[in-house]
Length: 524
Image (tube, rainbow, N blue to C red; front, side, top):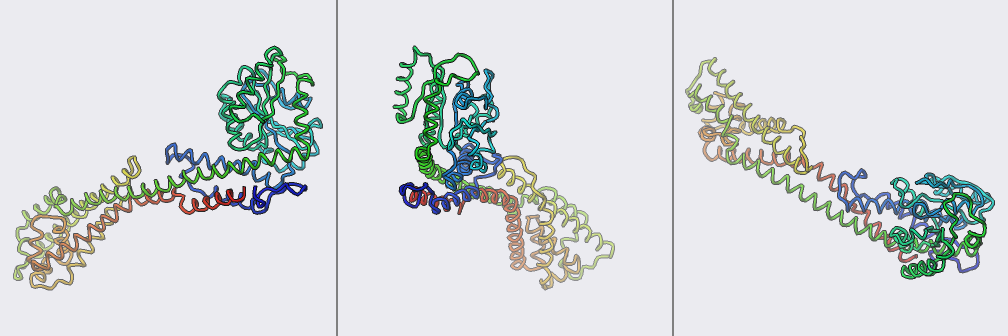
């Protein structure tokens, strides 16, 4: 290991280099900053959920084991006693201590509240250790100084909370004392747990509990063979004789070898060596886990940008459909067209607005103004309905479920109609002056708006008022203006989903993790 990492070569107290501690501290900060979608899990599939689980597990591992150990290698070695249901873990812990410090029972699950047992003089050292937030502390003189025994819940408990807690305690421990029985040692669970320990470089010892004397040689050979297959041949193995279905303390000689091993482990040199070996393994596996997290985050980053692109395509498709309806006259085929024809039926003189000598009685002029205002309202309504329809459809497609987008169509239509009135104000042809005298700028604006959405006859009437060329230019201009407004309005309905996709993209945080992984490789 690099001299910038963990040092124990000078005969003094092993100590972590400030550089390594700084790198791991920075890594913890970067894990907290890493965005992997909403933490409630409602936004993602299994890949993102797995990435979040890996990030959270790494953070816990740093908080509960690696950082405390890097800050103080003199902490007692935390030995977790783990295993399957009914393996006799609590009875074994009690027997090693010589007192009932952890409740043992034939009922399952037994260990509901984890217990950590340590020598009284180790209490101040352990006071700030995160494991004390997860387990009830118990002091006893029989525990060798330099070791803390942690009785964990069953790995295969039917209660999920117990299984989760057992996993956390194993992650927080320096060494694993794995307890199994002749009936359970062939199960997949023990070997999966041991493989996990090996991957992380955690030191392991194995206890084969409740072994009948006649079966001991055969079982010992079989278990050693399995350990050799798993490349764990160096793991200490202890055989504890069968005492029957009891929760009483085992005879002292039944656990004498195991107690002697713990006493040796508690020694300064032996304990520090085991802790350092385990810590090195954890740090080495940490880089691999960080790189796995980087790969998941980069995949999410790519997926987030792809999703944002698809959402924009959704908005573009709905905008194109809406604009096509504007440009092909679809809007004018229904109520709007009927309203215009009703005006013409009631006032045929509307088609002669550009005749300068035509003077209407005041009442007829008022009626014409009211009629055109009604047409303007119809134009406003069909444009507003079109916008709101496609905004809601685009938002629903983006969300993957029905969504009612905030109404924006009415404001858009009113603003656009006001702009058409302003557009006709500068027109000063003779026909325009005559039409303005007959219906005012608002009336001319209504004609321009109606022509822009394809109302039959309005474009011709506008051409006669403003001239064919200028009238056509005006229609194209206000139609393009409306199309752009519609496009922006529909795009705005999808923006929250595009922003959410972008917000879930890890981005710069991935670069920071790349840096930490490289630093770990250099230092560990």
